[in-house]
Image 1 (tube, rainbow, N blue to C red):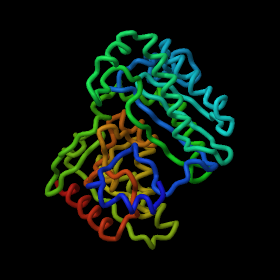
Image 2: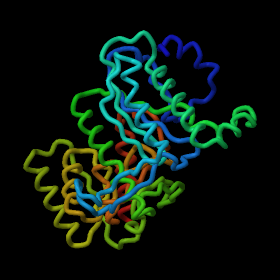
Image 3: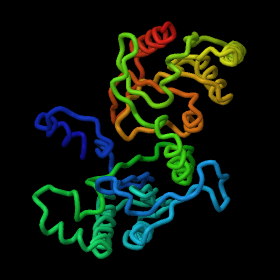
Length: 336
């Protein structure tokens, strides 16, 4: 949808709600781009395989976390990789089939005649046929279903999520993310409470959503980390060192990590696997997970992420007022 079309229909669309499934307004989905695509099984049913291995096993070993695909999962993987056979302008760069969802990276190498969504639609249709062949009850229920009832008969939930590559380094992170997905799932299952999003957590005068070890809030010693943006490189190193020393003495740093000094301090504590509380301006939805850099700390129970504002699909630049509010919240949490 172009911006002109968006503005034309916006008045009739009602209130805009956050969604991970919305296409980017104004983007040309027929042009040369690389996409990270995610789609989920209807009802999040684990029909595509099962997780195997040990969360603590090293990569490359037989016991490392991996997904053992079901017959349906094998067909899903085959159909995804066959997209480039049906659409020669598309290159399949990566595929990761999980028990209840799929991640894939597609490269549109040159201008297409149609929206990339048509290729994904064709993939979904092929998967639905395989699903009904392997699960005959699905075909029967599809015939008997009421209008708009997708609880059975379709393999995939409506729509899909896409991320559009903005810069080169991001692609390496995408490949790592897909490869690391089974281990991340194994870690979450080993420590479910630390990875479950909690909504409506009231701290002082503010309500938050949270991921991580909420018991860190009950620690008797907490300290806000707030630094000037004008610190020199030497000052930043000194702040990081003093914060780490403080953390080793049992004091939990609390910060939104806005300035370079705050970021360096929180990174030093995070790398040392010491407890810390981080405030993020980006809210959570029910499927939110900590970033890959926070995964191990969450699993070890030494990290808590607090989000004071609702989830938004598109991130907006931090304003001065938002920064001030986050610092005020960090100060309030530190006093509790």
